[in-house]
Image 1 (cartoon, rainbow, N blue to C red):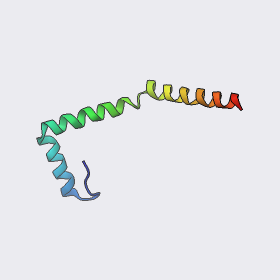
Image 2 (cartoon, rainbow, N blue to C red; image 1 turned 180 degrees about the horizontal axis):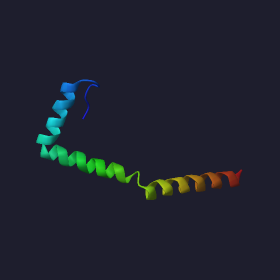
Image 3 (cartoon, helix red, strand yellow; image 1 turned 180 degrees about the vertical axis):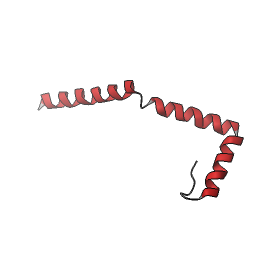
Image 4 (cartoon, rainbow, N blue to C red; image 1 turned 120 degrees about the vertical axis):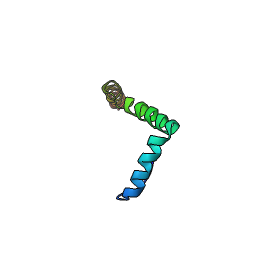
Length: 62
């Protein structure tokens, strides 16, 4: 949901919309969980290790 910053009425309206719209609430919940899993320690460390492995491969070729 996008609202104008400092527009308290728009923020309140968005909150009411989420609370009163169960399909929207479930979609936001699932999307939030999916996004949060991308930032788990396991995923982040795996990405960092892969990054360094790739850089070491390139460095060893040169």
